[in-house]
Image (cartoon, rainbow, N blue to C red; front, side):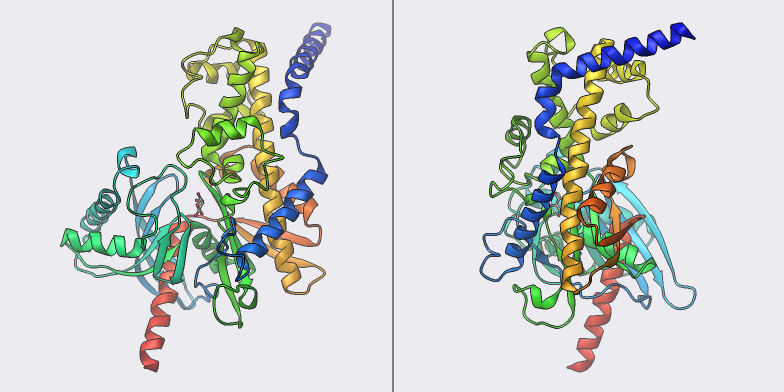
Length: 471
Ligand code: BGC
């Protein structure tokens, strides 16, 4: 017993000792309540800029109209094809929605790889590849002759002028195919389908993954009027009052706005809280200077921030016996899944060392204590600033509606949110503290992107029929 206590004491001492040494390097990543409140207020200002007629063209948080004007009402019906591009996987789906008393959604899907040379090749190659995958899927389902309506979940910022037109503003995450930015991606898809000359499809809607997520959750829970993705990328959407969206004509009702919040900070407004590590990650990225907030809080970049810190601490002699290995120099070694594993409470230090060993990093016990602390600090900051963004959103909705208190549901998807052991808890806690007048329920979305695209396509088809009748 005494021996065990001594051992525990020794470890606590050892841990405190190690952590004290590196604290000064992690200090600027630990935010006070005041800083978080400040981030939330800045966020709110950027939202207003994105919505304003005169300020929207230069705004960084773009607040893009989606032409989705209501959540589903249960009357959606039919068979739809959906594509999901821009998340962890590329998928083609067949979604069968049935309305009425026994409403249901049945889905069949297939995952396809998009090789990095296609993600970063020419636009024509990318869209030909997508159509090749659709062709394979239609063969697999035996549905080549059906001319189905299609909803395209395309998880990148797009300027929409209608439900079925979206001009790509800029690629984000790992994509960089040429000749797509500034083009209508629905047309690029239609052109590629024509080139293939094998089947016809009716592209009805282009949908951001946040919007698909919100719609999927709203189908089950009508108080869901916000969508959040905390995964490879980071973004949110919500139902905004039409009268506040000065970039679209009309003042009646609401429209879902794809915020594209990942670009928050691209005008320098977060520079005082960004660190040298954030800058290094940005400089090494495919889109330097862009998506600065996303680079602080999404799955694609958290591991890279950790790697930059570890390199610095190694250079200073606190880690890995001062030796920067080839592994540590390798971009992308720290995938989010390793972060999640390292931070798991159930994991003993020995297991942390085993994971580092797997990554090719030969660590001591002291090293593993430090690595775990670095991972925890980076993911905690991510969850907190993501929470500050969400707090700004729900509080704006509350004010829009002139309420002292708002009950609202947020539909959520994304690997970081779903798989990381602490992210969702810290995120939710931050929202609660920063927006105390809002009671927010978080609803996990199952397959939001595919199902949501199909629901939006169903609404789009119905709208089209109504318009045809009126003319
Ligand atoms: C994109 C958004 C998307 C988010 C989550 C970001 O990089 O710009 O459109 O919603 O990732 O996938």
